[in-house]
Image 1 (tube, rainbow, N blue to C red):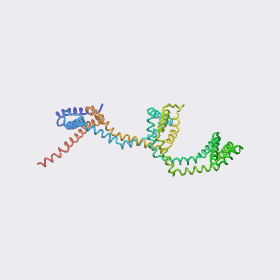
Image 2 (cartoon, one colour; image 1 turned 90 degrees about the horizontal axis):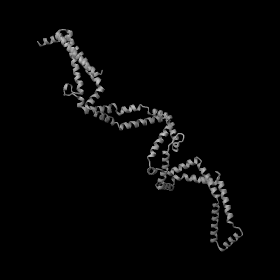
Image 3 (cartoon, one colour; image 1 turned 180 degrees about the vertical axis):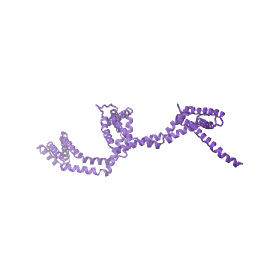
Image 4 (cartoon, rainbow, N blue to C red; image 1 turned 90 degrees about the vertical axis):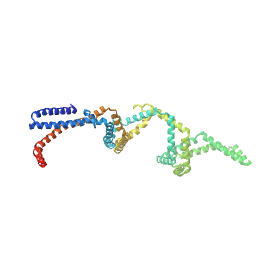
Length: 436
């Protein structure tokens, strides 16, 4: 049984009790108990009827009375706005929402959930799936143009001369300079041992001979001819000797303690140390950078690279046969995943970031809360709106009616006792004496 029916039954019972007591009072007007019950039931009936009228007037016109009744339908717009405002600004205001959200350990649940599904492997698969969807929607030519524009804009702040110096210093510390000199020595030795080098030396000697002969006098030419006839001047043997001497020199160059190698190394280091202050070198680097980035081949190069990357991103990968992109991504993901798991400070920062992001989203869409309430209530008919309020506060309203009858009866009892035992025997005679 709901409270509305209970309140009606109580009001009906009070009314019937009042009628019965009224009949008894008619036949026994001087009976104290009957007069007491009549007075109390009358007060309870009046209280119950008054509260029934008041509660009913909230929703409709009781007994057709239209003066300040049907409050909810009459003030429909105000009621809807008030409910929406209460929900948005009081019940779900941003301060309260943020306080509740800050108490939620998002990062703990996130870490447990990701670990449950496979940890770094799961994250890598998700990243690959996203990249695959992204790659399927991209055109390499357009993407290359955008990337080229981005690189050109970013390259304005690149200072490559300092980077060259830094890389050179790093190469020296790592021993790459010595390795480079070793490779240079091997390459030069291989080139010097080549037959073309012998021919080049021979050609160079013949050019010198021709130059000397043409610039010398007749006596000099006669002596040169005599020496050639007597095999005193053999350019072929001279070229062989020079090539052997060059090979011996380059063989010594392989030794890290070779004076020539040490001298070359010092020259390189000295040159590298001055690169940062060399304005001509800086200008050349800038010119080279601008020329490279504005060249049409640069965009074509990016397009060809992106085509291969997009193909790799679009290709499927399985745990047994991971593709190139998976093998490249997974170590990085694994590294950061372990870092997040073991770094409580980082977890706190991530959780704060998630809270801030969620609160910003809610803040941007906070007005939607009131809008949704308004839109929902605006679709209600007057009867639906009455039913909505009754469902939320109906029981309390019906208790007002029940309490009206109860309080009316109690007040009636007290008033009857006051009139019979205080007012009529004591106060009334005093008033009559004063008036006479």
